[in-house]
Image (cartoon, rainbow, N blue to C red; front, top):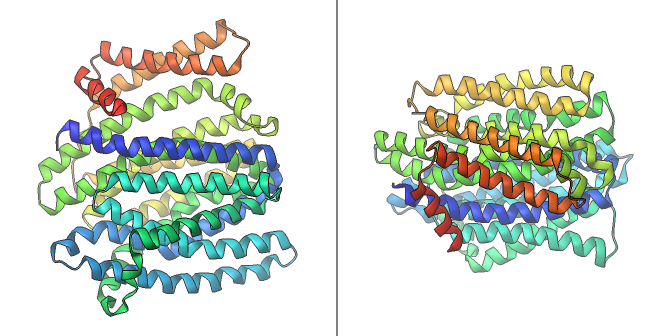
Length: 487
């Protein structure tokens, strides 16, 4: 696969990710101005619990589909595969509702949390049905339809939450979970007819052996999901244990902004990359596969490194402009979270090596080890530095994960890291940060938004200028990016 094809595939995902990030950012603004940190912290604890349980029950379906679709397509059994997946997902959804609502007995003294729990129990079926459909689009490389669906989902969440708050004048924290349920329901109904999902309701095509194969592949990933949850959100519970709901809210909100920006940037490369990795691996082209890894990792670092340096330079100004005053102090968490998720993006590349060789057990062990360290780090750092310590412990855990995974992955594929290019990316990013810092220190335009815009322009121009001077990127590559954006 040539560089042009990689830029185009990843670029399409990138544009969709950017639109999704912007819409998610709009929702985040609404949250900061209408919900205080304590209420947001309580909701975050419930949504984090939903995240754990929903991924425990359903994530293996999408990962299995992504891994085995090519196999079943080649033997003309893709309809059986999809029917089996949609069928077992419906059964799991019924079990999920029952188990999740048992939690109501443990919060019987809090009627608000009971309502949120009930709403989230209904979200699961629609959310994971949509996830399976979108994963199918990824497998068939229908990137435009995939991106339209992702943007539409985020748009619906924005529209619904704004409608609930401003039109219905309903400003309870329940509005967040209710908007998620309604938006997922609307998109599910659209999918049902536009993609004719009802044809997969034919249980004559249901095959237990297919479900078993997916489960055997994805079962270790269930353990990975739990440990991944510990890495991502367990810090909220420890913050609540050692501090209070307000700090949970401040941490969760800042983490949300960091995740909206950096995880989407980290994820869009992998969205286009993994199907190509699988196709290349199935054909036995290991040399080509290694070259693909190198190109995609370089593309990822080309984008994520300046984002990290840029956030360090402008995050304080960014928070003062776009968030309510009660959330301003969370900008430090935003910076640390961004750097942590950047390492997580690199970890995803290494995990794909293990997934290609069906050695998901290794991913599980890696997650267990780093989760244990993460919990220890959390208790130490949160005790001394409050919710900021939670962000530090997460960053340290992802760095540790990356180092261990890098060593182990060499047993399967010796990835070729372009150290010279990476150094040039880092140097250009550091010089970019210096320019932004000098501008903010010596020039005050008395207009924060204009100040931020100029900082972004300085950052982009200086970064790519230095890259060209250091020959860290070819002019042809920039031309391809410009053509893509123009198109």
